[in-house]
Image (cartoon, rainbow, N blue to C red; front, side):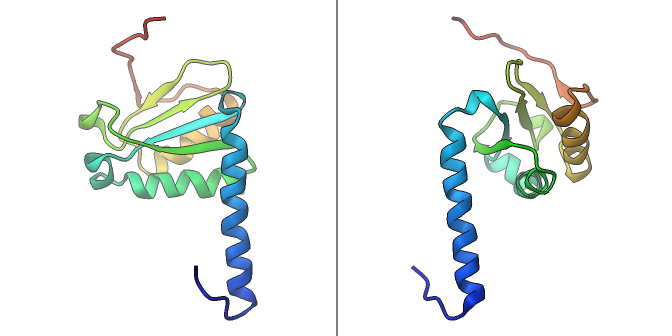
Length: 130
């Protein structure tokens, strides 16, 4: 654990711990909130997924959108990296491809906040068996 040298260090540590607690609390009932899964396999990271994930994390919090941003592995759409899967409560997940910061902003404003479908959706090529 880092040593606390001043008040700013203490505040930073407090914020980090509160973020971890919020993540744990949200994960108890993930179906009740919006889930944003960012493909962070090697191909995704090389295509900019790390920046996209950081953007979603920061912007959803700034815009007071209750969402859980999750890092996942390969989604199987390497040709369209970075890929992001968004699940709104009570709806089927939608996967977006070629997500950059501009597209991430559009996903937040149009799809997450208003449920409006936008360009860049990767059609589902499989169905789960119940």
